[in-house]
Length: 119
Image 1 (cartoon, helix red, strand yellow):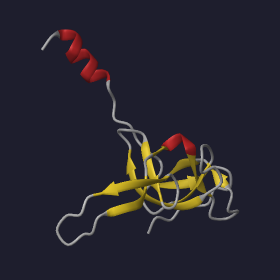
Image 2 (cartoon, rainbow, N blue to C red):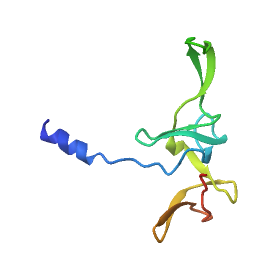
Image 3 (spheres, one colour):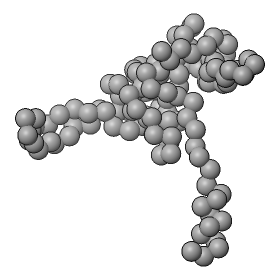
Image 4 (cartoon, rainbow, N blue to C red):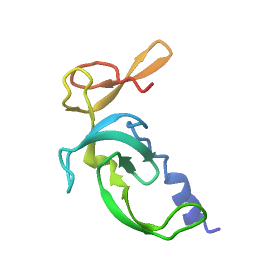
């Protein structure tokens, strides 16, 4: 492998998402702006997220085994930058920051300072 490809591979860092599965989020941009929902899946390497009830698409599915075919509605991937976490205190969209206390690191809503429970 040429040197430039090795350098490029080493420069690529791992992306991190501050959003997690089952977080309550609100869509802030796009076709579904204003919709609220629960996070179903997160793909940090792609920078994408699936939100319950947002980004609905029609999927033409072929029947396979005991699953019937037909046109079904599914959530599509949204860009992470188009959603924000809902602040548990105020119910408004909020940015996420990390608060380090001793050896524990917790996610906190930036504006209010309330912890985001993900249990």
